[in-house]
Each structure stands twice: as C-alpha cells, then as structure tokens.
Length: 419
Image 1 (cartoon, rainbow, N blue to C red):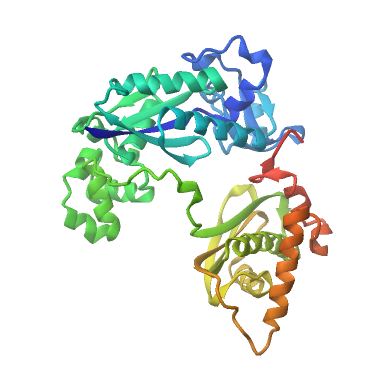
Image 2 (image 1 turned 180 degrees about the vertical axis):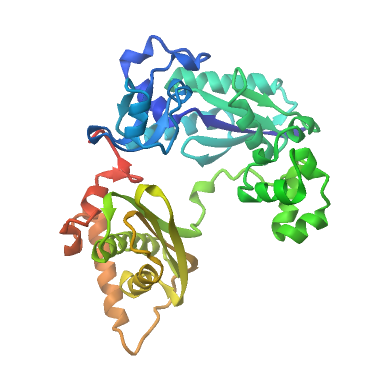
C-alpha cells in the first residue's frame, strides 16, 4: 500500500466567492461549465475605476482579462465587466471552511495557500478504491457547499501533484491522475511547466537546449550540480518524478522565516519624506509581529516599485545585532532608500526583516537606554493588542502620506468588506 498525493486548487478563488455570494448569478451557473459564470472581476477601487485586477472569472479571462491588469484597461477591453471590490474577510472565512471540508475527506492534509491544499491517502484501500472517484467526491462537495469550482492533481508525490494540477486546469472535468511509475505525462511537458524553477527553467532551455522535462531528465546530476549548485540535485530529482516532501498538517503554524509588509500607494510618491513616512509605518508593523513571536532579525530589506509598476529595486543590509525595534532599524532602511532610489515616482513599498533568532537577553548599549525602550515597546504592544493598532500611532501617520489609518480597514492590503 502506498500514498497518493493530491493538490486541490480553487478556480479564480476571489472571483468565484463574489459570484457565489450574488443570487442573480446562481441560477445560471453549472459546475461543469466555466462559461456559465458572469463577466466579473475583483479589482482594487471600482468607484474610481483604478487599481489592478486581483481575480477574474473564466469568461472574463477568455475576453483577454488577466490578473495584475489595470482596471481602466480591463474596462476599455470589456466595458460590460461587473467589477467587485475585494472582500478579504469573505475570502478568508470561505477558505477556512473549504480547508475544513478537505480535512473531512482526507485527514492527512496540508494547507498550501488561501486557495490550495495538499492531501494524501493510502491506495489501494477499501476507503479509497478509486482515486479519481475520491477526488471527484471532494470536487463535488466543494461545489455543493460553496459553489466554487476546483481542479485536482493526483500523483505519487507532492511536486508531481502540483504539476498535474496545472494540467488539470486545462483538462475537462478538472482532475488528472498520474499513477506511480507513469512518467510519460510528466516528461512530455515543456520545461517551463517544471513548477518551482522560475528563471532556472530559462537557463535549462537556453544553455542546455532542453525543450521538455524529459530532456532535462537526460542531463547528468553532475552537470546540473555544476551549473545550479544545490539546486542541481533538486532539478535532477524533479525531472525523474521524485520528491520526498511529506504532508505537513500544521504547516501554517510553523515558525516564520521572515516578516514583511507591503503597501500599494494610492498615488505616486516623489518626496523622500512621504516615502519615509510609509517605511516607518510598515516597519512598526513588522517589529510588532517580531516581538509578538519572540523573535529578532539581523537583516532588513527595502523594496520599491516605481510608477506604473514598472521597475524598482529590492535591497537588504545586515545589522550588527539582531533587532526587533523600529527605532534601531529605521536608519538602515532610510540609508537603503537614499542609496538606491532613482528619484522616480514610487507606487509600492515593502519592508522585510529576516535572518531571525529567538529573542533572549536584551542587547545593552553605552549610547542608548535599551531597557527603557524595551518597556516602551512592551507598553505600545499591549495597547495595540487590547485596543487595535489605530488606538496609538505616530503623528506622521496623520499627514497626507500616511497609510496606516487606511490600511487598518483592510485585510492583506485589501478591503475586508465592500468599502
């Protein structure tokens, strides 16, 4: 008896949640017919016809609408689009309930993202005699309960299940099963379909002359290791359909490897003081999360995206000691801004802290009253935990550049409900 691994992926999840929540669309929709959905998109700010497309229904995609497209461009392309503002609370609640449904069918389950989940089950077994039928039962249950379509890939391991899932998205019925030992389906796929490689797939095509995953499997492990280092071993295993990764039921509870926050600005920022205000707001949030987790970081990063979301940079710098305090980290971020910012309009900013360690003893200094600052941060954190992050904030957040008050009404950078 062996395990069969599966990956279930919700189709156009945000858009599907919006369609499912609107009675005017429910009568016409059919699980087996993607074209029974309306021309609907979820986008940043429907009232001002601005922002970007976060999700689109299949009929909208067939009309040329893509995620990350600007809403104004999408409306020029398809004027009759129904535009919904993001409701992140709805999506998170629906995701939580769907994950619970998956666990009821397959107890060995690992949430992979808000709309994806790995699972595994023994085969052959009395309970799961037909793997495709088992997947079909889950697919039907998700549709019956939530009116959300899903695609399922089944394979001998997690990585192959992910690749099979991508094939299932283009397969009638939305389920693909690659039985153990069936590598032909994998090897016939183009190199670009090797999930997880990103730009390394281009290197395989250009430098090794590969066209298919089968071509990659014929490259020696040594040659791959010489070109890609440790990644060479990973590529070799994947190309041979091998992946030892187990299911991690508590993956979402694992310790963080980094903390970050990002905000897309309502307009292009050209003034240093404006960018500095947002950087400090983001850093305050990151540091609060660090302290709450009992962690500190030795490396900080600043990401800047320029106007029209074209170009930008991400740069990081190591600190002398691990920190969890905005007061001590902020100057490093400003130094990164001054060194790498070209002066172009800024449309998005991100702040990150990684290279984490567990917070133990406080780092003493001859030039700073560290114990006093620790007590101050502890008091601020307590107020935020009890009364919310807008109960106490910096005066700079009241300036025109401040984004804190607007962000407090959102989840994951998007509106928790219709604004």
